[in-house]
Length: 125
Image (cartoon, rainbow, N blue to C red; front, side):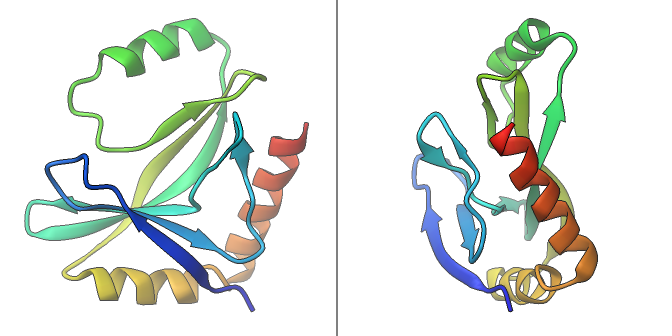
C-alpha cells in the first residue's frame, strides 16, 4: 500500500507551497527527484496538483512560454527527452490535512497506480 513518505515546504513563495513525495515513486529529472504532488495555497483554499508528463512537439516554444509566465504557481521541469513534467490541479480543500488525507486514499486507487506506472516508464525512456 502506497503512502506519503515525506513533504518539503518551499518558503521562497509568498504563499504555501508544499512538495509531497510518496512510496514507490522516483521520477528523477536532472538529478532531482520530482514530488508526486504539490499542495499550493489559493486564496482561502489549498490545491492538490498532480505531476503529469507532456511530450512536446515544440519544446523550445513551451520553454519560452514557461520562462515568461509571471503567475506560474505550478512546478515544471523539462527533461533531456523534451518531456515537460508539470503539475495540474486535481482537487481543492479547506485545509492541508484534508489534502493529505485525499492523497493517501487517491494514491492507492487502481487508476492512480496505472498513472504512476506510465510516468515511471516515460521517465526511463
